[in-house]
Amino acid sequence: GQSLEQPSEVTAVEGAIVQINCTYQTSGFYGLSWYQQHDGGAPTFLSYNALDGLEETGRFSSFLSRSDSYGYLLLQELQMKDSASYFCAVDGGATNKLIFGTGTLLAVQP
Amino acid sequence: DAEITQSPRHKITETGRQVTLACHQTWNHNNMFWYRQDLGHGLRLIHYSYGVHDTNKGEVSDGYSVSRSNTEDLPLTLESAASSQTSVYFCASSDLKVPADGYTFGSGTRLTVV
Image (cartoon, rainbow over all chains, first blue to last red; front, side, top):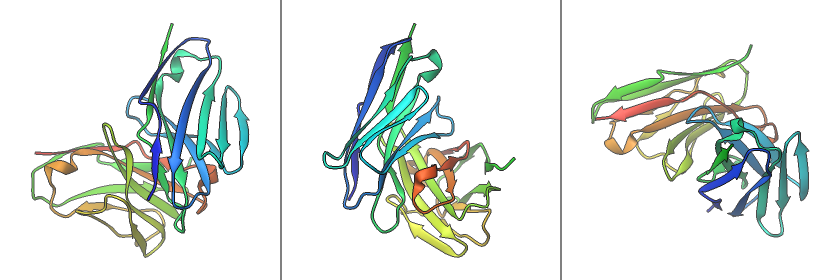
């Protein structure tokens, strides 16, 4: 089976840096994805890591360590609009479907 | 512009009724997915399809069915609605089997079973 763990809530202040961790257990693994969801709206794709290391996209970066079954999403220069839920997701096995974690609610305070 | 649309946005139904939620995408994506979202559980996969006439069960498929007769649509049917199926339902689509380019999600259907 597959399971993912991420913190349920994180609080940070505007302008700061925050890291959201994700650990996973899978029977097969191809990559780790991150999605953002505002107020129950449609989740939107942020990043995908298939190889170890850091991928940077603007203020957001995502990291993967396959040997540690661990990844994180790094958000820099936090803005109020970054307040949202963030989900990590793994794909693996023969079918490559995405299995999501339970999400981390990020609250950015002024 | 290409899009993925779900209908209805909100639905209230009675226990035991059959309900169908629609999902339509104009991305020409081969892959389509149905998830449900509940507090404390994140997004859980119900059914998915990799192409016309292909359907597969996800982790929480009991009580649900799908059919794929064309590329654009993957309707989700609740055969006999139960209160435990009160949830927000999201449809998604993607191009590649390996989700490197991400899934595109619809805006969701909020279903209440009374």
